[in-house]
Length: 509
Image (cartoon, rainbow, N blue to C red; front, side, top):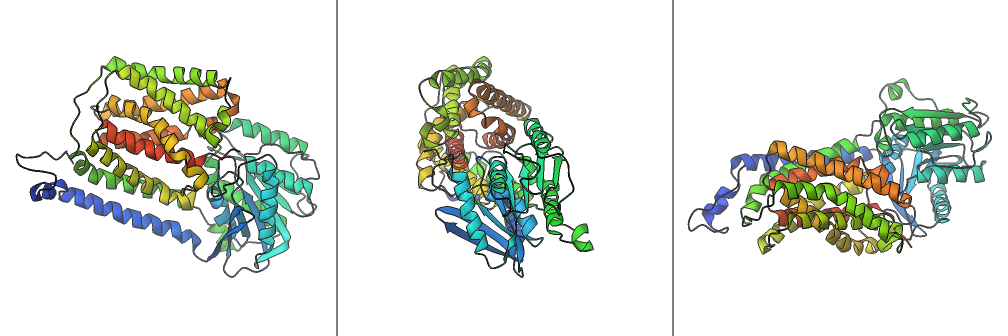
């Protein structure tokens, strides 16, 4: 899959060039990628088989309702996501419960997902009440058998709601729990879960369990209490673990005295949507691999180079200066709501400062060319499809609504210096050196943002996202190896990463 070279007299539009641009091995790779994309969509959509799925909106709150098609008088469950989450991110619990006979309502809190209202202190309870009223309107629901499930920020919301009105909800499942004024009587039948790799939430769960009276099996009396430690899981991956989904299901089954058939017990529903999503992303990257030589052939190669000391020195220096700059700026501006988005604006600013530092160390920059920018736009389109279209069904509100769409160009521009410096630094690297660049950038981002959360505790949510950086950097290093032109790589990657930042973080007032 080497680069295509022009013979004398050839042009990118000539028949000879067109025939050489995609030889048979790359046609086969392209065909394989398309087949895998189709297979991944088939696997994803199979999760909805046999379910009634309804998209609703009441009082500006977007909701998603799930229940078996033949359901009647089913116990109802309200499922609340965490900070910077979405209703899609909680669908592992939604599908597991719905396929087991529950009627499930998920929603986006204010400022999250498809909810365009700004997140405020009192909006969580208001949004939950809206979802509760909508759940009772569904014909499959038994209004006398209701339960709550929430993650992180959502755990605090569901525990508080169950404490406020204990007669309304028979059970509460709090995953990666925050805080609430629990007692031995309220909320009724409380299950706490935390991942073994999120020790702060484990400690919090243990404090809550002690305040709630300790372990108790009296579910009939509403005093049931338990804590489940999910092995090898942290704050995000706990949501993907079938053991967590099944533990919640078993707790609710015991609360409502529901008995499962032997077959259902032996073959429980396992949520595999993220595996299909990973296959989908891999298939699109294979598609890019097939197209990359054709794309790079139209971009003239730049001769600009920098010394190894400049490339590595700039990378290592960038997090120190970026963290210091944000610390100074925090004295005059509210970084946690910069640009009208919570935390995400500060992340974009960090990338801007760190990228400028890294670029300055390289000293010489190539000029962007029109073909390079065109290839960058194509790269963004491919990444947008690969990462986002299925994410809309799996874990993220990918379609940016008005409040978020205006943030995208600002965040994308802020990310350009980092990706341009990254593309220039590793442009001529071989396989082993690219692996080293992946490791170095991952460490710099994890350590840099980890240090930033120590300097500015109001940005502490970033700490929970640190495990994602090595995964993202692996994808970007792969792309940089395919598209060796720094401007093509920088434009496509920055447009894509800016979109991710605009989509993930909550809107601020």
